[in-house]
Image (cartoon, rainbow, N blue to C red; front, side, top):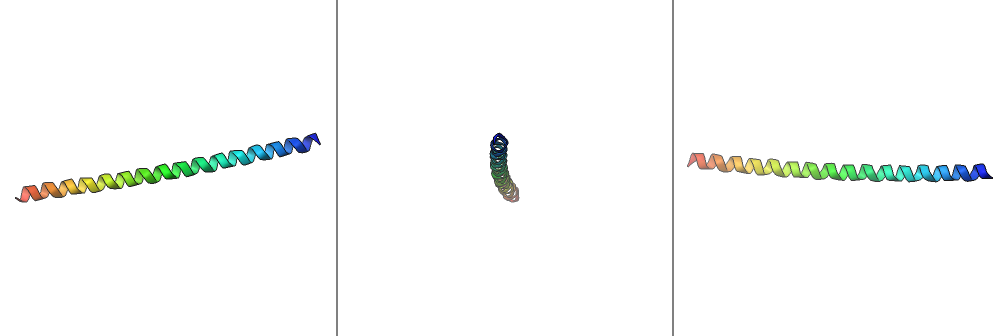
Length: 59
């Protein structure tokens, strides 16, 4: 009887750990996506600035 309870507890702990791990992975993915978006925005801004500089040089 006691063994069964222990097994159940272990299973519950494992499940909890797995859930936490999944949540962490999801958070990491979201952060990565955000970072990528920010990077893209920065690159776009840099391009715009370069274009503006080129236009100014032409004038």
